[in-house]
Length: 333
Length: 264
Image (cartoon, rainbow over all chains, first blue to last red; front, side, top):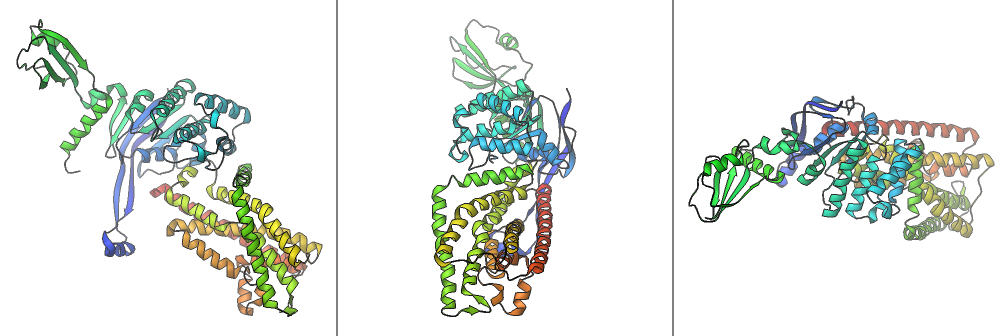
């Protein structure tokens, strides 16, 4: 599989005019030229192959949108370089634009006053899409996302969910090789989210469109993206299979033992006791290589054991633990 | 180029969606044109001509003068560009293989075409039917009036785009809209034709690009410029248009690199 996106040591610093508080401060702001530098992306490297679906995850202000903007050529990296389909995006922005599709969850690309289908027609003109290909794409995509019922309606009359579906269809009409989505499910209800997710993973599977998606919603990533890139405080902290995030970030599985009669306090070497209700005891399995058999071995007498369950932490919990630990380690930031 | 034609066409069609606005605008326009003509009638009183211009000619000038400025909304070009730059919506345009300023201009010209057909022509016709209006001085002047009219749209659109792009650095487009309005009122000859200006002021105003928006098209219709002058000033107007186009292109490049390098 060929690599179609490569980021090598990419950083992006923004200069912000320093503002002083208060009325006198405001006057001072007018005449001073002091700047503070904010680093939105620091030394991030990754490579993405054709046909992948990658989730780009991180809290607010972690530099997700900045990275998308650099990959689409709207922003120039302050250091490092990016290649998208063999080009440097900001140098060949328009050539790059023809081969990528971009959806911003918080910014509409449809024409507000026009019926959805007219926006699509303008899109066809801008991208010079041959008529037969346009018609075929429009038909199949709007069927999949069920746009038919509101294609003739003006964009301003659509619900957010309908609008988002239309945005995504529009971004795919010119058969882009890569689809960038910046928070595509933000503000959508459960049903609309579900429709968008199913659609995106189908586009990725059936059309082979490479998908890069930023989100806060972990379910987006679990359902669409087998691969996850996680950033925090502008730095890359994880890049790999979504399923392996847990072991990489070291979140523990939870073990519950239920006894027929209380065996009294039961400390184990393999697992850490977190709560003891007598009959029910909860543990954390902090190491990945510990198996249930080892736990049972350690208990020895299992005749009183009535039930046993191991729970994989969900991805949200994994990340929450990670942030909590990080915040404890970095009180200064 | 067909993209921009498509933008203009869709802007034209979009206007049809706002039917009530069309009717309200038409009434407003009628009142405005009637008022402008009424002022000149009051000024002339029983005098046959002032500075060699008859009342009939003055009424014709007032009617024609509103043709360009009545159809185009320069303020919507200014605020359109200013807002897109400020809110960062312009980023969306940087992602498309099309030019944002040309898009804004094409859209506004599409709307102007609509307003010209639906608002300007009917109101001018109604007022002309009431007060009377002179025909063009000659067929040549009639043809050149059309050419001057198209040039007038081009120049006012480019001027507005220039003002709109300046808004990117000033972070306010509202004051620029006011400034543009004041300049147009005075220097385009919209309020008062140049022949009533003091000679030196008139000489300066007649060579600024604003003069091609109202003064020259109307003056040509009335035959106040002979054939050579008509062609010469048309050439000069084309020169201004080219200069303004270069200015818009340059400012746009500066604005978009600034966004791209530093972030919106």
